[in-house]
Image (cartoon, rainbow, N blue to C red):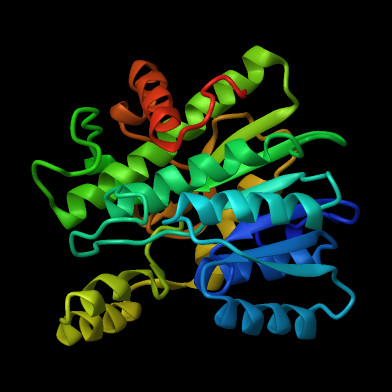
Length: 309
């Protein structure tokens, strides 16, 4: 049986895509694959120095591509608003694909510029705000998709609507799992709202399985634990490379007739590696009452209209 891979990517000429966190890892692989397939691609990166290096790498690998760079710090809602304005100008009023890829994992207890717990604020609220601010250009010239990255870790996540920002207690892995569960609930509610409003927009999600990227090193480094960062690097012996970890994202982004609300990940070894396939969600990720409540609270926290879609 044929396994889906980069050679199965369709021609994306005339389409426009934005990838957050495109300067390294899965985001960089995703952006390059989209650019090589003909999409005008915007790399949305917090570190513009590394973003510029990634941009140049894409242009070298895909010299005929139309690739741009926009600064985006998901941990700062003012930066999210500025990035959304910049992206709107870069895409000339047309956006066909938004890949909410960027994220942080297992950090010490930190706060965003707006006072939110860093993992929830970056992984969920930043992408929530970016998506809503880009709605005016999403799907203006045909069907559009929003693909948001979750994680196997969502399965242990719980949404505590009374303590989303970890003001009473904090666990670095609990906060990460909550943010990844929030990504799936956001996807489900965005897709429901798009269908209810008749908008030609699909919301889907993906996870990379166990992929060797820089994501797992940030937390130990911030905590000053060099041994933990070394252990994370050693873990690459049993993980798959970012090039494989990006396949579920690209699958969700381009698979014809993919149902809205779908979730994809590696299809082998409990979802840790292998070619893309439908992935299993936890019961909490399918709780639409919680999805609606989280949407309303996320809109309140970010100061956005919950009924934009």
